[in-house]
Image (cartoon, rainbow, N blue to C red; front, side, top):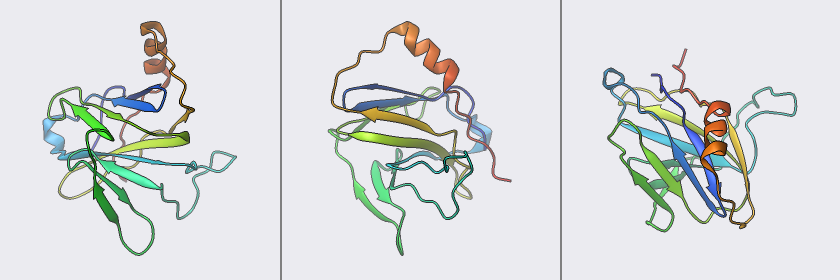
Length: 154
């Protein structure tokens, strides 16, 4: 499963928006998950941590936030004041998360009925409640920097 395009994260205050180019139809993707938490999945040397779990993931197809840790995954439905998505079944989905704070690390996956892809590259965003408008020029730079490809599991 490969996600082509440039999922990017833009933020203003406590809001983060993610957009990406959807997988091609022959990948049979039925959903996308955004994993996030207060710690990176990499150590200070850039090496992936063993047995790492993000604090949460949001399944954009089911509008649920799930806690994958512990003995089982616990999920809760999200409201429109927590997440809002546009064009989920189109070529360029976009989802916005509200009411987030602090330093957060994000990565996405795509999934079909049989498997889930590996994580994308990890993004970190510090949300301090300040409104920070993102100009089109900055957005273009972010798109160049944060090209996130969902890679096939090996």
